[in-house]
Image (tube, rainbow, N blue to C red):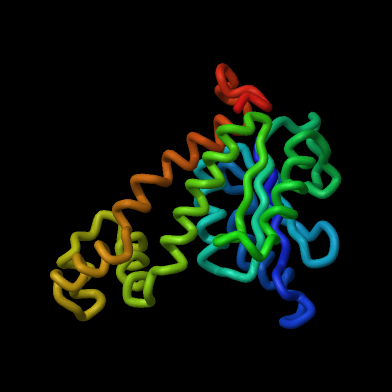
Length: 212
């Protein structure tokens, strides 16, 4: 199981943005892989419980693109039965999410994301991969995002069709995708999901807690 805790950055400077975030993430309620949708816990912090590492990766990258939030992931067991409210839940994943989000807040981190899991080695590896992906997103230009979004919105569309939609040449689309490292991101996402799964204890052999 995965507990994702996110804390707003600079709330005293920009004001409380939790309600806006919850409205933006409302599409996750009832979605596959989301056990308990996001809700405010305390102050300017929100939390959710998920059971699909692929959904966790998608969510984390979505939030890193959005910016303004520190993201902590706790990977491990939760106490069953899980209460209707995420903030009332307990178990190791909740404890790990708390330590992870506190680490994610550090200003020395290149990307505000941290992973703590029952399998520490896999958690560290998952964090490293998510940090790398987050760094790729942070360097992506507006032109790059426009092409990536168009490709993902029009699933199955060719580069020629995307170029026509954006009013640019097919060569421009190809160049922007290369510069945006879109193929590389797509290739690495499954690795991040697998490492998160392992961090939660899905593959404990040879990667037990403290085995470094």
